[in-house]
Amino acid sequence: MAEIQMKHMYKKFEDGVVAVKDFNLDIKEKEFVIFVGPSGCGKSTTLRMIAGLEKISDGELWIDGKCMNEVPSCDRDMAMVFQNYALYPHMSVYDNIAYSMKLKKVPKKEIKKRVEEVAKKLGLSEVLDRKPKELSGGQKQRVAMGRAIVREPKVFLMDEPLSNLDAKLRTHMRGEISKLYQELGSTFIYVTHDQVEAMTLGTKIVVLKDGEIQQVATPRELYEQPENLFVAGFIGTPPMNLFEGACVPVNGVLHIKIGDALFPLPEQTAERLRRKDYINQEIVIGIRGEDIRLAADGAMESKVEIYEMLGDHVYLYFTYNGQKVSVRVPADTTVQREDIVRVTFDMEKIHLFDKFRGKRI
Ligand SMILES: Nc1ncnc2c1ncn2[C@@H]1O[C@H](COP(=O)(O)OP(=O)(O)O)[C@@H](O)[C@H]1O
Ligand SMILES: [Mg+2]
Image (cartoon, rainbow, N blue to C red; front, side, top):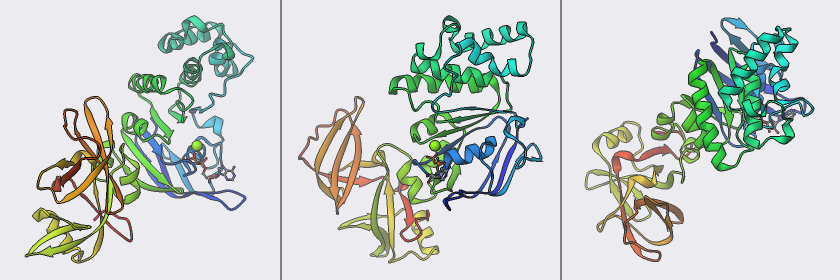
């Protein structure tokens, strides 16, 4: 069992930096929770407060109905995998993995059995005698995982465990971590700055910015219903196109106006804007590149500046009203760089945001 609750948690460092602000989150047993956000947003600090490596300045951390604020790290039944792996350089792989069990005075035979099991699971059986410096990056990463697994913790905490690996190995290890999560059935809390890693691994994603939670949602919800402009711009590659525009009535029909381009709104969206008093107001309109289509009668016209072939599809980039726009089109498109194109939006897929508060309308 491991249910974790964070209630109004703050971290204020001695130099006055407030790294985490009013952090509230419930983590259920066996969830795979991701903290994602740009560098410096407080991901590691939050994880370290959960691990007990950093004192909680204010608020409370509860695990399985017990307040943990004053419980030392070693009594929290968690194992942490760090970005730099933190292996003991003078010890063999075997001893690195066995270390925590030796400290706990587990019988030698039992230790050997556990180390061999874990090494087999992680593909380390052939390198148990080696020292960390004789291992590849991927192998070191696995030893760090092995060291966490043998402790059979209630909760696994991982701080950017893949960020030192090259892209191909990172994708591979992402799959391995997913598999491990399925097998172990423990609670995972995983920190990354990489939104792709977050989207592919997590069942619940916590997006952070400047020490504050922006949104907690499934990968799908984050993509389809970003709560604010920050999340809209952070999740997805290339990022969502965001335009400053306005909501205007034309001949009795509510439209979105971006520069000179007018797009009629579906009735349901129009109704929402009327109800919330956005008529004739400036708003921000978001649309993903895959929800824009080339169309001879499209309301937005521009010249293609970049043509990016990505195998099964192409991204076209142009500028409209001072704003860079990405459009995803099929790979067999005849459009080329320098062509004048017209596009239209799938209006069911637009995202609307309050220009001043940045919140989803
Ligand atoms: N020991 C510390 N003393 C003072 N400030 C710190 C300390 N550790 C981290 N910070 C600051 O707290 C903020 C959050 O840091 P961190 O949690 O490491 O971010 P992330 O892991 O998201 O990159 C940053 O502004 C960082 O400079
Ligand atoms: Mg960090």
